[in-house]
Length: 293
Image 1 (cartoon, helix red, strand yellow):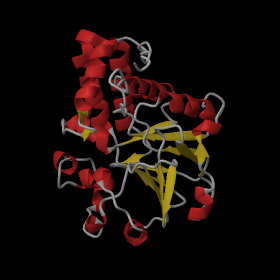
Image 2 (cartoon, one colour; image 1 turned 120 degrees about the vertical axis):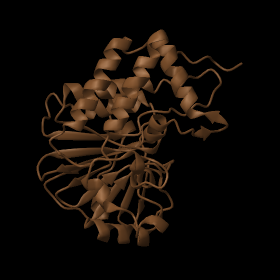
Image 3 (tube, one colour; image 1 turned 180 degrees about the vertical axis):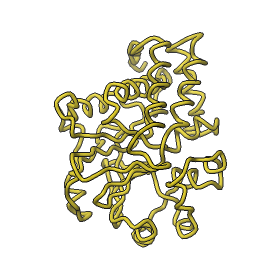
Image 4 (tube, helix red, strand yellow; image 1 turned 180 degrees about the horizontal axis):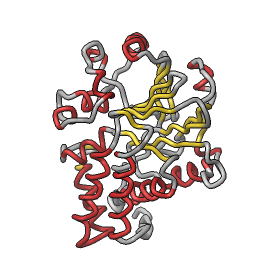
């Protein structure tokens, strides 16, 4: 019989969780770095980009230790795809709500340093669009985890989760020409993709099938030629995304780096905002969470 997995205690009560999520949503909407659905970063300091984290609190703890924001005010962090943990055992629960709440609290504590991007799993949770993995309902597992954590207050927490997700921008861009988002549209959509979506507030049409935001966060199958063409359309040099699973923690496809942060080989990428990079130089800066004490 498999060893039972211990379930960690809730990080806070429902009222505290709701307050953190709503306050984080307000900060995200009012972010001075934000123009439409795009975050813009200048040429000073360090920006730490992550991949999908899917509830991995161990890697999140290491990220917080690495960033040490209390003594590193010039460092910023971008997070995305925090919810919907992978479940491989029948006695496991999806408690990725814990990571989402802790990340929201981190944003409230350091509003000028913590940033978030929209992802396909968050967007699916917001739209109540079912995702299945290994025959299980991902949305149901997440909502059952919220109910396990917060009991009768779970609906209020889920409402606060929706408020947070609705506030998320789509992408971030550095002065040095690095563009960061959860994914890129499928190659067949790149030449017709509505790039004006980054310059304006998102509409319900943008977020649904056929919309630009939906196409961005759900896209896969990137090739060097497609990445090159999209870089020219956006006037950028390099891309960093997540979304596509990477067992080794990252992959390089032409001008594109894919990061994965949700497992034991997970990675993150510190970027010096004061310099330009080749793709080889940028890939050389990738760090593994296992190397963080």
